[in-house]
Image (tube, rainbow, N blue to C red; front, top):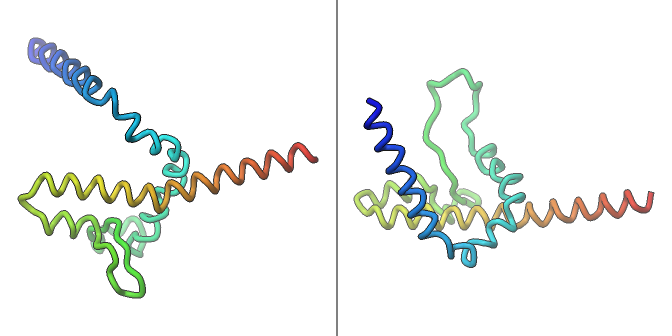
Length: 132
């Protein structure tokens, strides 16, 4: 009951504090992600929108698993994350590293170009507004 809730809340606070302490120096390694955050936000659904199975949303019988991967003209360049994870069942560390690598690939292929495009569009619009 209440005692469990209080203990669980206290344990959660301790875990958050320990995580914050452990991650305090991560900004020098992951700060570049924050500078591309708008690009990641703007472009993240591009891959999923292109990969969704066809058919109406209410028809749930033909849904299948899908995830990010790269293929060019039918040749797999980067297998889907789902198949890569399935290939390493039983190797949890490798699976975690795969997720990190796929996230980095998505940031590089989507976040960086979309952040640049967004900033260029804002710059052009600002220049146009000033001249008008």
